[in-house]
Length: 478
Image 1 (cartoon, one colour):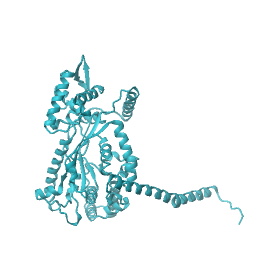
Image 2: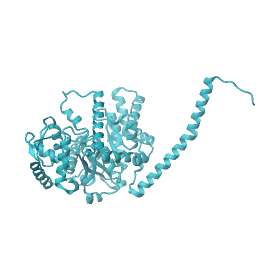
Image 3: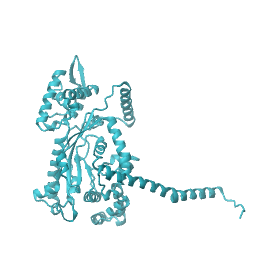
Image 4: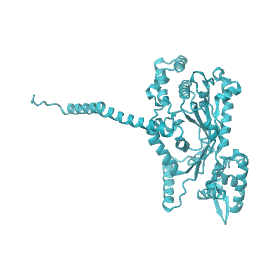
C-alpha cells in the first residue's frame, strides 16, 4: 500500500485539474448559490415589507423556464413552421433560430442586483451628475389605479440617462422592465441589463419570426403583471422635439389585450412620464445627425474628446466652479386605463383585424404622446433658451432677458405647463438657466449684453425645442 506510483507530469496536471473542478462543482458552486439565494430572498422580503412592492411571480421565474415557455408557445411554434416552409429551411434550424431569439430577448431578473447594485449605481450616477427632482405627480389619479393592473410607463427619450433616472426615481414604487436597444448588447453591460430585468429589442427588424417571438414575450410579461417602461419615440430626440411615435411595442401589448374582468384578466394602464434636463450629455452628438454630410470624429478622437470633457469637469470640481449639469426633472401624468378606453369606444382588441387594430393603436399612441408632452417639465435652461431663440441675432441686457423669461413663465403656466422653479424663486430659475448657457458658451456676453453664439444656435434651439410644444414660439433649426 505504500508503494510509490510514478505518473507522467501531464497526467498529474490533468488529475489535479479534475480534482479542482470536482471541488468547484460539488462544494463551492452549491455553497455560492445558497449564499446568493439567501441574500436574494432577504431582499425580496424587505421589498414586500418596507416598500410594499409586490414582485410578479413571472419576474422571479428562472430564466430557462421562461425561455422554454416562450419557445414552446403555440403561436411561436406556428410562426416557426410557417417560416421554415416559406424559406425552405429545415425545421430543426428554424427551432435553433427561435431558441437564439428567445435567449436574446428574455431577461434574468435578480432582485438583489436590482435593489442592491443597480439602484445604488443609478442613484449615485444621477445625483453626481444632476440635481434630481420629481416635479408634478397626479397622485389622486395614480391612487385610483387597481394594484393588480399591468402598469406601463411611457416616456419621452432625451438621453440614455433616462433609463438610470426613471429606474432610480421609480424604485420606491415598482421594479421596471425596460425595452433596451442593441447598443447595450456589449459585455459586461448586457449581463447587468438583463439582471435588472430589461429585455433587448432589435429596432426596425423586418424579420417576421423574430417579431413574433418578441411580441409573444411582451404579451406574456404584460399578462403576468410585469411593470414595463417604453419609449414610444423609438430612439433619442435629434433636434430636441418630441418625435413621432412608433407602434411596435404598443401594438404587441394591445394585440391580445382583453378588457373583460373574468378569469383574472388584468387591466393595462399607461402612465405618461415627461423628462427634461438642463444639460443632455448627448446633445451635440445627436445634433450631428441633422448633418449626415459632416465628418464624424474617429474612435481615437472620440476618446480624446471624452477624456478632455472629464478632465475639464474635474478641474471645475477642484476649483469649486462646477455646478453639476443643472436640474433633471421627471413628471408623472394621469394614467390611461385601456379597459376603460376599450369600453368607452366599444373595442375588443382580439376581434380586430390587423388594419383595424393598427388604426386604433395609432390613435392611442397619439394620445399617449400628447399626455407625455403635457407633463414634460419646463426647466431653467429650456426656459431661457426659448427666450433667446426667438431672435437669435439680437443682444439683450440681463434685465430685458429676465422680463421676457418672467412673461414666458406666465404664458406656460396659463397653458397648463408644469414649471419646475428651483427654491420656488422665479428670479433664481432665470439665473440658473442663463448661467448654464453662458458656462457652456452657448450664450456669449459682450459689453453686458447677452446673445446666442453663432456657432451654437442649433444647441440653443435643441433646448428650446424641448418645450416648444407647450405654447412657446416654435423654433426652426438653425
